[in-house]
Amino acid sequence: MKTERELILAAYEAQRYSYSPYSNFQVGAALLGKNGEVYLGCNIENAAYSPTNCAERTAFFKAVSQGCRQFEAIAIVGNKKGEQGDYCPPCGVCRQVMAEFCHPDEFKVILARSPEEYRVYRLRELLPFGFGNETMVNGYDAWQRHHQS
Image (cartoon, rainbow, N blue to C red; front, side, top):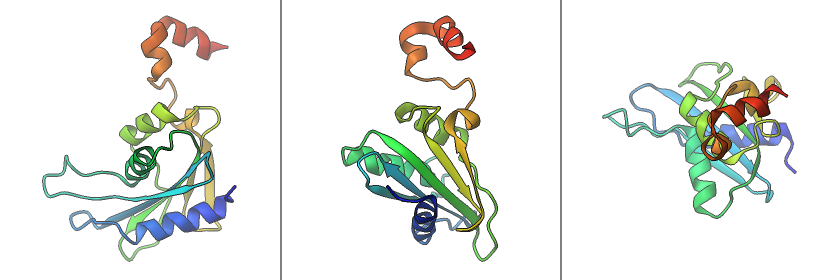
C-alpha cells in the first residue's frame, strides 16, 4: 500500500497537467484503488465552464474506465499557479462521486498543503447525510435509522 506522503507526491505530479487557463487554479488528485494502483487526475477547464471537470472526478473516471471500482484513499492538492497551496477540499459533486464508490467510514480523503503538512478525513466527515445507494434501495427512513446508530 502507498503511504499518505507517496499519494500526496503523486497528486503534485498530476497537478502539473492541470488545464486551467481561466481560473489559474491548478488541482491534482491521486486515487488509490484497493488493487494497489494509483490513478491520477487533474482539473480540466472549459470556456463554457459547465463542461469543466475536477481533478478528483478525472481520477475516479479514469479508474472506473479501467475496471477499478474499489478505493482506499485520495490525496488532493490545489493552488493558484505560482502560489503556495492551502488545503483544497473536494467540491460537493466530487464528494457525491466518492460516495458512489467508497465506504463513507473507511475511505480516506487526504488534503495537503505540502508533502509534510496534510490532514486526513473520512468521507463521512466531508459528506454527512450523503445520498447513496442505500438511500435509493431502502428509502430515507432506513438510511436515517442506519446513521443514527
